[in-house]
Amino acid sequence: MLKYYLSLAILFILFSNIIYGQMNISKVSLGIGVVNNFQGQSWTDKLNSINYELSIGGKFVLNSFEWDIHLGYTNDGIKEAFNFPEYITYSYSNISFGSRVIFFIKDLENNFPIPLSLILGVSTNFISKKYIGGMRYDESIGQSTSFNYLTYELGTGVTFYKNDVVRIFSNYSMYFLLNVIT
Image (cartoon, rainbow, N blue to C red; front, top):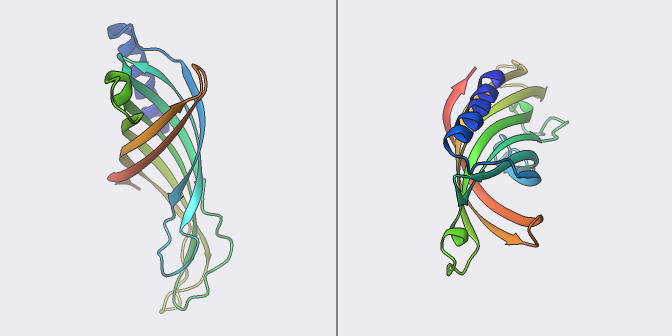
């Protein structure tokens, strides 16, 4: 599955370069963020995890657009079973691979007062669900498993430019489920 998406991304870049000579690879970035866990609110106070992301990208067709391909990793760090009757505790980790297009409004409209951007993307998430402890009311225990799903991303961001090389980009994105692949 990963080979499929990687092949599509490479074909996309190569094909786009043939059609759009303005597209380039001019950005490498490291990101850190916070994502929601898969655990329910009533079971734990650990509702968020740190997400690490590496991305490459560049200008896309117009100066106000950028593209990127990203690889991310998240682990909720749960190592002990929750002290809640008839509940199975799992620990989740996620490797995500995807691409996105970012539209910088200020680059298109110079008199726009806020350096706002809009984000649209798609990603594949490879989830590992590890049994930690606990049992159901019928005394059955949980099973470790893995699955993957496809999501699309809608978001907005704010960009502050330090100089031509360094910038600070803060964004908020929502991920919507497209398909679960087991």
